[in-house]
Image (tube, rainbow, N blue to C red):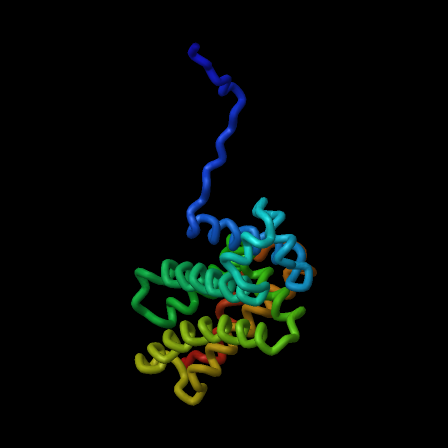
Length: 209
């Protein structure tokens, strides 16, 4: 006798590859960390966000610290790609720096979760190992801006008496100040305001006319 199996209503769940599962965990960690902060980002919460048991998360990341390390690496890659794309067709280093300054408010909106993660971690985190991760994160920005400033110095457009690394940290400090004040700022900046902000950021690096 032929027996037919009723398959109506049977659902199959696609099994993710290791790389896809790792990606889903990182995406969930970014969401949890940006909304709950570093203290509130537990591996249990991330696992629930992904929809997996916590032991599955530990197959990909050995600890909360390892998860944060991978997430910061991901954010660095995203931001460096965004900066490089922004100035890909610009050969003048000073114009490239100015373009980044003027685009920064839009970048901070586009990568709102990523910037929030970094800022919250910077404020909340006290343990030395995680501070080292944040140090490496900001050092990637420093190296990127320092290279542009050094090109401007070699071209004679930027002051040589200001070390390029100092100029790079100055730009990072300005960016952090902008981000930290967004919560109390009312209204978007006009294009004229953005030009003024860009000029103010670079004023100390430019050679006197």
